[in-house]
Length: 193
Image 1 (cartoon, rainbow, N blue to C red):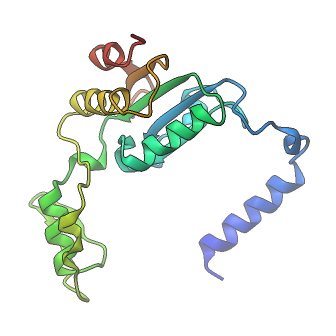
Image 2: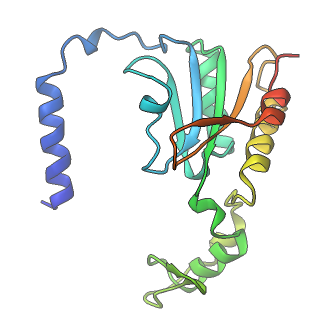
Image 3: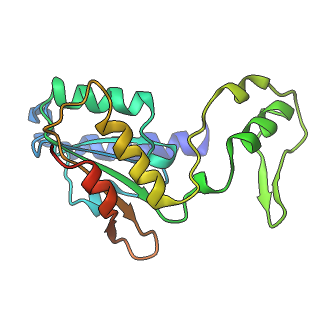
């Protein structure tokens, strides 16, 4: 058993011992909202948004981007589980700002092993074989946070399956302060018509 697996299972055993009445939580989120945010381990949506179990849906992916799957989850969140407001929350110092589609495609074509970065850029370890399929994926990299939040709010707002009565708010989480900073243009684009 790996050390990580052992740690996770031990933590789960402690959680189960203190589970209490969580089995009675309702399926729909109690506060009727959803957050689309980044998978970055420095972000804890429960803490920065004041959540407890059962409060809200939190959808996470690399960059907190409005991918087809993220929009699918938001639509299910609304249509079947009653969320009425959505937040798109990106963050400062995001790893998605450190590469482009071309860099990712090139790295994957030379090796599927973990790459490294230093002051001169990305480097592949050179082990194993690569795959050219990476060039067919839009990795939804980020050039500027404000632009990507606005782009994602607009992509969600303009999707044919998203009702106009759902307000969509755009924010950037500051990893140095913990503060949520509004992107006014994004919130305006996500306003109820």
